[in-house]
Length: 411
Ligand SMILES: [Zn+2]
Image (cartoon, rainbow, N blue to C red; front, side, top):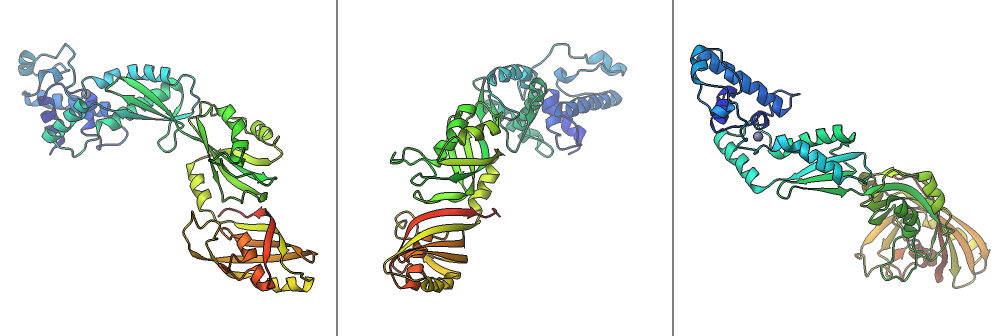
């Protein structure tokens, strides 16, 4: 269908505003707003009519004075303003929405936003009926235009930036109720922590068995500063509750519905580091993408374990443990098998060092790939891990104390 033919069809249906006219040609020529397209097409159509000295559209659409005598006599420029049969004058009301938005975001700290709309069924109906009549070859849905046009005005009025990817807040306009809703998107803070004491879980313990956690210690001052609703903790793996983590473990703390986003991270770090159990460093703003990367990362980890043996051992016996370097087979440990699928995994011990303490105790330092169960590497877990320290020494072995001493780079 030719463009002008289609313009004529649309303008025949009743008064159609520049936005709604232009939107049916939204995919033609870059760099114009729909109301600019509408204005250009309306004028060009009327010019054409003037040249042919005939016109057959709804009179409310005639906004220009004709030059040809024939049309001048018979067709008058429309004086009174009509209501658009598609949007019902919605675009003229956008400034009213901007005012409402200004009010709704009062007290909410943000730099970036995204506008979304809930349209009423009538409006969608009217748009669809128009499409049935004139086709959809170059059009854009009205929702897209409202969101964009409102976004532009909010940018100007509030000096904030529209961001389609990860906005600080979502501004939802509800055209049925006339209300504006502001959704505060979560705030993400990256950091690295050390856990200096045993007996503290990484995340909040549901039953209340443990009074605190790495998560709570870190989140407390952050919650006070952001006035958020709640927090989630995403760690790059986790150490056992009874193990210390002396290496720096990356994490992302997620704060839901924060009212404050401008944070003094240095000051927050100082506050957290008053804790004797947990220390943090390298705090910075982060995002959901980093959370995903963190969950998938498989960094190398170095552990230090104090091993207790069932019978006396010599320094010479410890040399046998060199055989552990290389591939090992590990079934899901019996202590976690109630919550994890029982699978056999290949793991790698990359380096191993021992330090003799006394006849029944020695220090074992191992570098492994993430996911290796160290306590089972020592005890053998009734043959579920092979080979193991216990198997190679030919005696029962128990991990008495465990520390994570280094976490390698996340890949
Ligand atoms: Zn309209």
